Amino acid sequence: MAHYIWLVPLFPLLGFLFNGLLGYRFKEKPIGIIACVAIGLSFLVSAGIFLQLLGLTPEQRFFSEIVYRWIETGRFSINVGFLVDPLSIVMSLVVTGVGLLIHIYSIGYMAGDRGFARYFAFLNLFTFAMLLLVLADNFLLLFVGWEGVGLCSYLLIGFWFENNDYAYAGRKAFVVNRVGDFGFLLGMFLIFMHFGTLNFDSVFSRAPEVLTAGVATAITLLLFVGATGKSAQIPLY
Image (tube, rainbow, N blue to C red; front, side, top):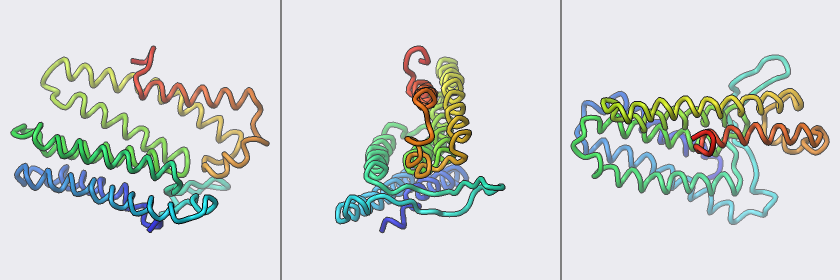
């Protein structure tokens, strides 16, 4: 079951593509059903993998499922791969479980809105980006999900863009996120400079022998700046 981890982010992505490209042809009910089913299927797959991990020994509860080779140049390579371990699966359950409740609630909340299909397309895309973030097995793929979450935050905050206040709030969120992202990028650069890779398994296993206390602190603070910007903490709020 765990080898089907790639289905977890795939279902919301398919929901986004359907509602984003074809949603205007359908009424609200099928749009909402498709969006909710996409998240529900992701939740079921996550739950199945979680139950499978419970039956394994602690040493067996950690592996990466490689989907395909994304970048390969010289000695540097990056895969599109998903990490299966207790933390990533629990976070996947949280994202899809809470996300499903939000989708169900939104069917009634957004009823009658002319942007109904667009809203659910954005919501599915938001879920996809969050799942990419929590399941990625390397920093670069995590950053793609990270940026996707920022983009979707901007799109949803400014969803009713005809209202100047909402439009301004969306632009502000987008700009503030970029400040945090700059810190995250610098942290990734330091990681690559010292390890020659961005894969979690290589970085975490070699960190004690590669990093000095000063470099480890600098990387931690830069990644923390990224998290500060994303979560709108002082002063990036």
